[in-house]
Structure formats: structure tokens, C-alpha cells
Length: 350
Picture 1 (cartoon, rainbow, N blue to C red):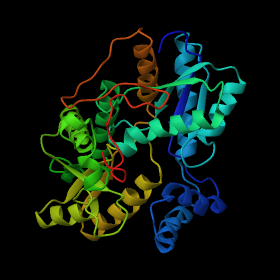
Picture 2 (picture 1 turned 45 degrees about the horizontal axis):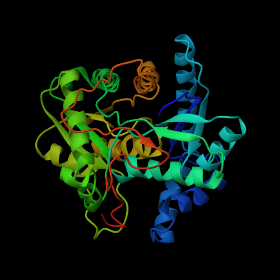
Picture 3 (picture 1 turned 60 degrees about the horizontal axis):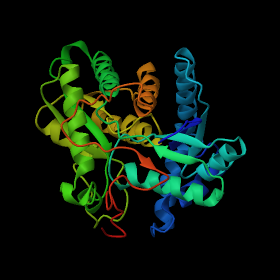
Picture 4 (picture 1 turned 120 degrees about the vertical axis):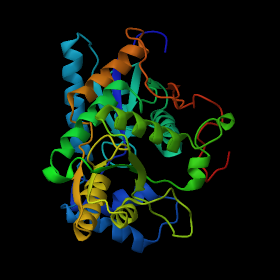
């Protein structure tokens, strides 16, 4: 971006905040995917188990407050806006409000650290759709780079892993197995993740690299990378193994304690608290396995510092910091992908 920046937009997935929002939200998420109504009803029960409220919007508002405080502490005069892909505040409405407020150009921080279609390219599409909906006078929007291997993110996860291990029975801590989880995606989507010349599998490679960095920083020599939250028809291959299946396999190997780190998630939204704090924890109890789950980094003060640092980096006030060995890609302008053909939706082909 050349010229002044007037604001920061935090762009996220969205979630229902009352029971009557649950089905309309899920219909937004799955629109055009042919998901049968009975599957939506099954997922809706997960939300209704928690009163029909996803924690994700509240967690994002907390992140925004922390970023605003970080900006204020360093004399950064940028208002922070909040928009979602699938539920209110919808990004189209937020960008309209930004135009009305006189915002000419803004940076966009997505609450996904990853490459791939759903983790990166779909946020570009959100930006392009919102600007098209607003029309003339829509602010220029520049999405910040991927940050899966930023030192502040790795440090926050590493401390959370160490803290989680302390919650295990004292006699099981030393032999506890560290297990990282991230959201599963179809294998076809993973193969399509990344620039066409990069060989695909950018998402799973980034997750593996982040897990490697977090394990080393937290003092674990051995660890596993598994997946959670798959959906869709069973005949479509997704990234495996699933966390629950993996716990059974570990139990068969004599493992009696695990620390589970949801490295693929910024905050404790519903897929974390249902799939890990309910299903995986219950399976561990059934197996007689001690279970501790590491916190996600969103509430950690270092996460707000990470956001502020990415902004400063983009504005030329800080040097980029990356720890990983897997490629991470840069910013995008007004919804145009940073590399032609990168991370196309597998439904559309490459």
C-alpha cells in the first residue's frame, strides 16, 4: 500500500450469539455445498449445547480491545473495525460503515494464520465481495501476510503447552505425549493449497512446521500432528488421523497422558471447545488417559502485540520476523490473490 493507512479491519469467520441465529448461520457457512439438512441439525446441536452462542465473536472483540490498547501504548492512531464472513457484523456492512466514516485505506488482519483456500484465499474473496457490495468509494483493503510461524505466536503456544502439562497428574507429566491439532480439510483442498508451482499441501506443511516450532520451544522432543472437525460425506478423503481415533491408537501403545495443543486455532471457538474439551476429553477419560488441553493464543497479550507488529511491518516500521522453513505468503490488495492461481478452491479447479 502506498499512502496513508486510516484503519485496521479484523476479519473473521463469525458465529451465532443466540439460539435463533444458529441455523441461519450454518446455512450461510454451507451455502452452495450441498450439505444435507440432517447434518446441519447435528452441528446445530453442538451450538445449542452451549446455549446457541459461539464464543468466537466475544473472543474477537476481546482481541480488538487488546489491539486498541497496544496501538494506544505505542502512539498508533488507527481505529479497529470488526467484520465477519458468515454472521453479524457481516464484512459487507462493516466496509460500508468504514466508507461512511471516511476511511480511504485500511489493513486487514484475518483470524487465520494459514495458507490454503479456506485459511487465506477465501478471506481475499470476502474482501472483494465486500468492496463490490459497497461500490464506489469503498476503501482500499490490504490483507496482511500469513503469520503461522511468527515468534510471538510460537512463544504463546509454547507457554500454553507447558502450562497445560502442569495440569496433568505429577506422575504422568514426564511421559505425556504432545499432540497438535488443526482443522481438517479435504485432501483435494490441501493438494490445491499454495501457488501452482509450489507443489501443493501448503496448509498441512505450514501446520507441521508450526507444530515443530512449538514443540521445540516447549521442550518436547516427540509429538504428533493430527486433525479435527472434519465434515462432509464420508467417501470424500480428508486429512487424517482424527484426534479421537489417534487417542485410541496412543492408548493401544501404552500412552497414559496427553497434552493436546490446538495449534491450528487462534481462539477457543466452538470447534475447539466441542471437539477437544468434550469429545476428545471424554474419549481420553474412557481410555483412562490423563488429558490436558493447551490454551489458544488469542487472549495472550502477545497476540495483540503480533497484530500490532504485522501492522508496523507493513508500514515499514518493523522488520519481518519468521521462524519457519515452509513458505508463507504476503499481503493482498482489494481481494486480488498475491500469486495468480494460488490456493484456488478445489470446487472450481486450478
